[in-house]
Length: 355
Image 1 (cartoon, rainbow, N blue to C red):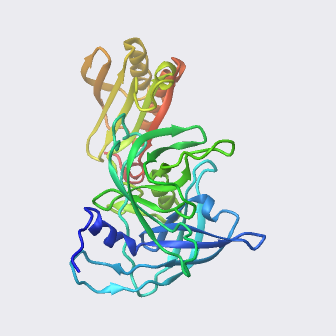
Image 2: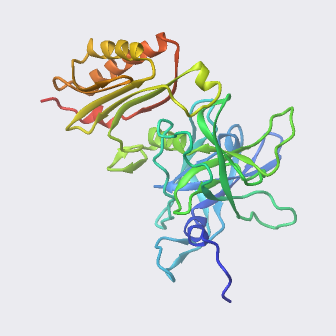
Image 3: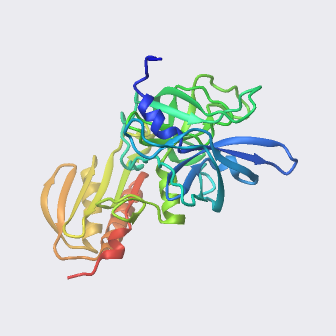
């Protein structure tokens, strides 16, 4: 029968077979359920609180999986999976975990993940983006775990007190068991994972919304523990950004988390290097430039109020560029700017050979 299909239908078909449930049991014997999703090479992402301190009883998919986008391609049946490594956790205040399963000789489709970082996110990014969330909330009276698909929208990008990572407020109902599930854009890219409802222990949950953790910490953790790579075989994400930092004054951060007053950006693609610094206080900017120049001599190409753009006068090692950027950062911090977003890349350190 020819039913009307959602614009997300093809995205759903491609992703559903890569999302699994995690059945757990606590020390009292009480059972629970959460969600996880495959990002490649047997690596699964879930929320930390889904598995931490609990015994993982079972991980399994419940939907047919398709390795090709073409219609009528062969389907891979749902199956139970065996964990061979993990779960591993990142920082205590980041609700993410990764583990690896044995896929044997039967592959499993992988969900592509966004390459955005904390540094990349600006004031209006992702707001009103349509998303698809897949997970396994418990459904009364069903005999087996059931994958649920729900559509929503990112309504705000926020920083929270209890975590250094960005969170997205989404207009989908928070349900237990969805934790660890994936939030996809229309192209099927994972933007985030489900972590919590909007509420605290002492307040009512804001119904109709939930909180999603940006995918960035999951990529970083998978790269650290398993060498997970988004491209070029480089662990984590490949970026020409060697180091980048954003800063804000207290007056700004008290009103907006994603409006910035200054930044340092060092680009190094293993061939060319350039540095850009901006600041709304030109005196502070000059002090930061002087601090950088004390370690790496600059050849300034553009200097105007609030901005300086330059290249190194010689061919410094990436480690020396990072040290110079850190010295410039210290000038911003000494001037009562807050460091609110940072991005680092490590592959340049591993590949630099000098002249």
